[in-house]
Image 1 (cartoon, helix red, strand yellow):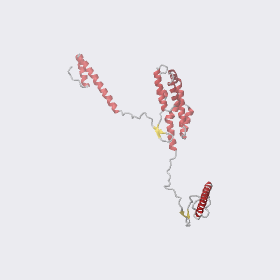
Image 2 (image 1 turned 45 degrees about the vertical axis):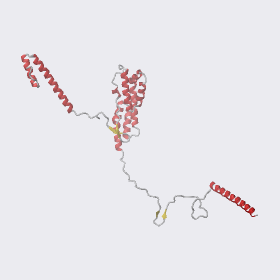
Image 3 (image 1 turned 90 degrees about the vertical axis):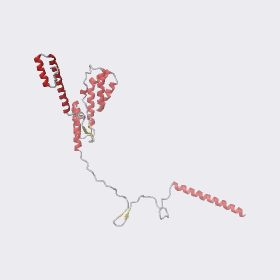
Image 4 (image 1 turned 180 degrees about the horizontal axis):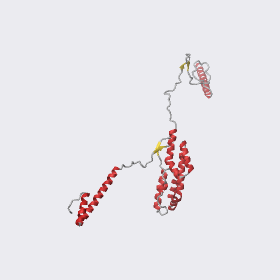
Length: 283
């Protein structure tokens, strides 16, 4: 029986019965090992098949669903994490390296959520001594985090609608960490959706394609009307019928008069000099 080809579980069971009855130890051990191997292969095959049958989870299963912002525009939500679930180590027994790694993890999350108090104080403690950092995480982180959550709730009320203001004020009045997280992650967006839905839908208004021109037009009586382009309070030039322009007044008039007088004077002097030279030539 040692040379028997063992292929199926049924054949293995038959070989085991034969080996037990005849006391053939080597055949018994061979059949037993082969049976264990075959059963393991069957189990592994079942597991592989189940793995292919189970649908793969979508990549966005843990991503926050979009919501509406204050302007009723679809945006990606900011997910506020529970810091109590991030601090999972024993801060008394943890090494300084473990404490620092935890602090950096919380700092990164605080910056993502725009938490001003935790971000500022935690960065200061990271720049300080390991003892001060450990002390902050043990005794001061909870209070700083709660203050930041309350600030975030207050920010959401700026310019908010009726439903958001009511929900946010109710959370502030209760003042619990769980209430802050529930509001910031879910309640805010639910209330904002109600406010956006209650806003009136703007109706399109007809706009004129052109503006009326200010050109002169004829009145029903046959009289042409036109708006004057310019109005002058100066009197027309004396003796002029066409009214070509406005008279020169002020300082410019004095300048012109002075130049004219100078020209006349020079002309008179030149005339006298010319006459004297002519008189001498005749004599």
